[in-house]
Image (tube, rainbow, N blue to C red; front, side, top):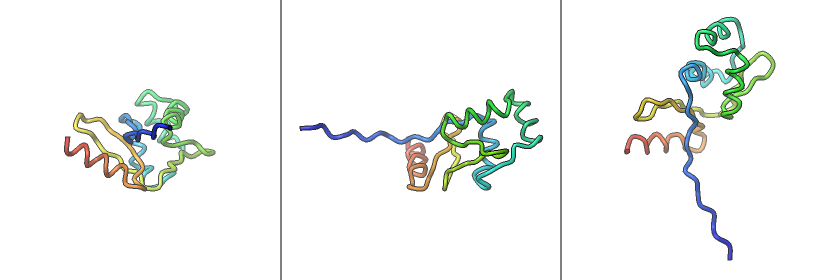
Length: 106
């Protein structure tokens, strides 16, 4: 007889200050040009555009298509935990809302 699979607790992805700043725009527009303003902002945060996009891609948050950063989430939400860390997660199935509720009850 096989053992049933254990469910995994879903958790959103932790993001840093630079990522949060850009993602706050992307959650509304779902895409952003990689223009000089973005490049200059990222330089102030010690990133190149390639390092920044690679980081988002490795976290499976966003990717680059041509000269744009694309956020593929349908209903992204950015939130904070009780320790001040910032997170982003998809809320299409309510996972992010549920996670936020769990954080509030801890």
